[in-house]
Length: 259
Image (cartoon, rainbow, N blue to C red; front, side, top):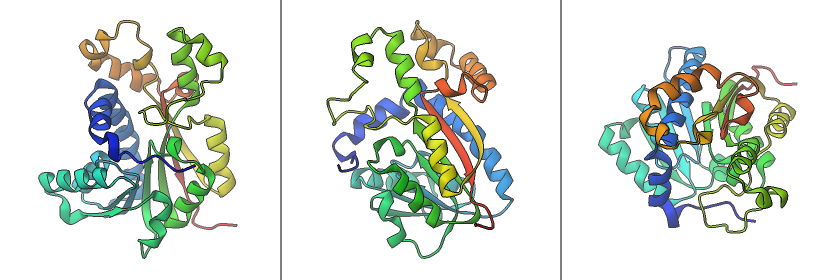
């Protein structure tokens, strides 16, 4: 099975993800974690890989903080959009763009990096453990991983709340491939296990949109976004709310010494 390429729906992807309150909230919660992670990595210019970086929203913000970012994506259209956005933001000199699948990035990088961003990609990858091992090989000892994945628990909760009982009883099997609904929602405990088996040391877990998507009154997502963001921030790193997020963000370190 081939991994998903977004060339055919790049505009729809951009509009539906980043042009909505769910995208705004996702970036807010994500950057709370990323700023903490950057502080832990020290006050220096980092080599950052954004694998499957799409249009570059996160990569560009990272470049604006002075870091050198390499962005790769399977979609040529996404890479073109990212290049254009970087030029508009004046950070092209801090960025390098590669049109390739995340699995193939070792062929394009000469040295290991300090930080890897892998956001909302694992749920589209047919061989997730092999992908995580590839990322491990590209990270220097002592470096960090920022991994965000689509949470199967959140998908289950959302479908039960809206009454899609038949869909849930059938195992939530996705019939249509060409949609924005991820092909492979991930079970959190399974992902944590994969990381630890490879050798990662998990340093943080955060639920992303632990309440937002479950509101009965959708208008409140817009009208009360500030209050909702404050509440999400308060509870998104606590169980049971963490494990019900529509996405889960995991930070992990590669030990200085392996074995």
